Length: 176
Ligand SMILES: Nc1ncnc2c1ncn2[C@@H]1O[C@H](COP(=O)(O)OP(=O)(O)OP(=O)(O)O)[C@@H](O)[C@H]1O
Ligand SMILES: [Mg+2]
Picture 1 (cartoon, rainbow, N blue to C red):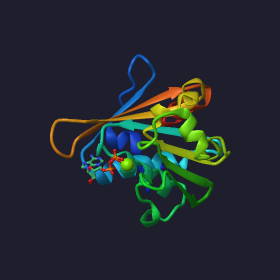
Picture 2: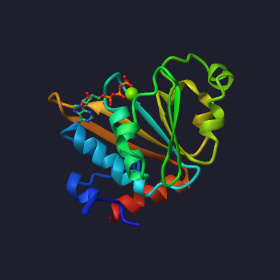
Picture 3: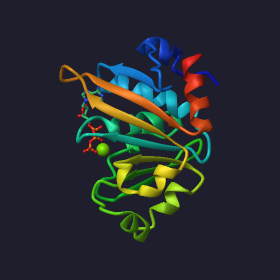
Picture 4: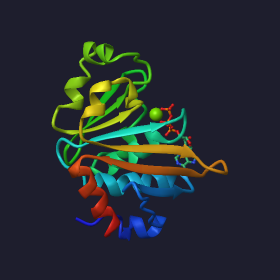
């Protein structure tokens, strides 16, 4: 499947920039564009995929997650920030688990809350503030770093693949 959202090739629309490390870089100029980028990603995800969203407070992680969920067939209106409930499950083309580990301080806390079952649960796991859960560091996953750019609405997104599955996913995006 092509990495498309609606009828547009997402890479061509955003401008492709693969760096020497094999990461894909995009510049988004609005929340809508970030969500569209997420939607394109959501369309090509498979069961068991793990997407880690890193970035400062308010950078746009939930915005991207909402787009990913839309691409997986989830009603976007049902996607809100799970900061207080820690995890939300949405029915879509696949099971979608949206987690926010911001309020947790250790891997033990993640497991005590039972969140590891969502992460390794065989659906698609989208994880905001994933750094606290250290077992992820040893596991194949796609990390997306979202950084504030110049201007209020500008964000740089870097897609960093860990493992063959995610290198192939980025290649699919690159050759869109
Ligand atoms: N290019 C952009 N991409 C994403 N969000 C943007 C962009 N420009 C402006 N915004 C705004 O930035 C905010 C991002 O909020 P969001 O909740 O997605 O951030 P977050 O990273 O999930 O925050 P938190 O760390 O609190 O979980 C929204 O208000 C959104 O409208
Ligand atoms: Mg958020």
